[in-house]
Amino acid sequence: MTQTEKRIYLIKSLLSEQPQYADIAIPAGEQEQKNLLRSLFNIRMPNPVSKAFLQIQDAYLQEEALQKGITEFTGLHPVQGQIYLWQGDITTLRCDAIVNAANSALLGCFVPCHGCIDNAIHSAAGVQLRLECARIMERASSTETNRSGGRKKAVEPAGKAKITTAYNLPCRYVLHTVGPIISGRVTQQDCDLLTDCYRSCLELAAAYHLKSLAFCCISTGEFHFPNKEAAEIAVRTVKDYQAKHQNGLEVIFNVFKDKDYEIYRQLLG
Image 1 (cartoon, one colour):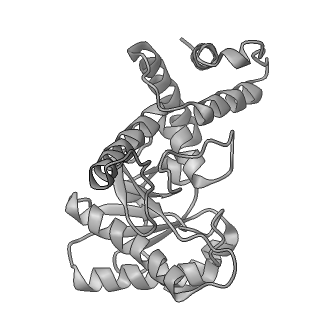
Image 2 (cartoon, rainbow, N blue to C red; image 1 turned 45 degrees about the horizontal axis):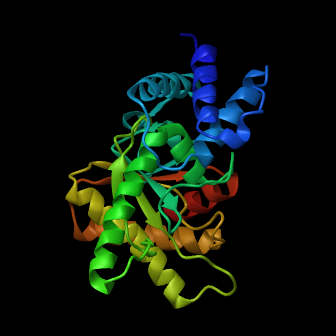
Image 3 (cartoon, rainbow, N blue to C red; image 1 turned 180 degrees about the vertical axis):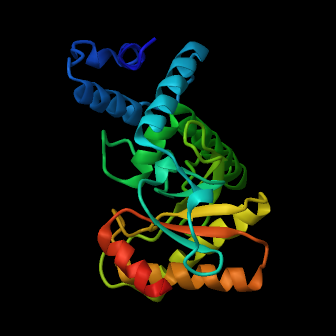
């Protein structure tokens, strides 16, 4: 099957799961088809899926990743000790793990083609990522039920971290962490929670014996943490951790926007 044939197969399969969208016509243009497919991925609930679907989806997404171009961590150069600064699309980076700035439901972004990193990571990884996240939250819900005696939907707290397989991403794992949401003045509690996000990811990476970890700019997008203050916390937390735990963990600060690159470049000299 060509990429176009795979894409149309996936679109038809996903539309068949959604009777309310039965009248949607598949557009002729390649980019319009890609947008529709991503939208259908985004809104799909974590329901079981056939092996045939996964086989075609995986082949399609892996080819898309190759076409975008994969950046090898081994080709990057440190800016300071075991710290790297790289500007690019984190879904194209081949390293041990990347960090996803998740929401409290931990299921990915359900807004079609939304610009957040959570959406980008789930879209490139495939439907298996949402399924694994759902299993994690289901186990958490069972724990809450046992404690309270009643059914309670789990919510992932800010400052913690969970690990999943990366599926069709070039990295091996994804670490999911929920950062603080800023709605006014940044408080000390907000700063402490963001520090906890970075520390939790570093500790989880070490627990899984990972050697390279790429951080996105946690909480600075949809959660509105000021970029400079967030970067200062990120750099300080990573440096403190590396000084105390000389375990060889190499950290990449991944940025997408020019302003974030300049902030980190100044902080890292």
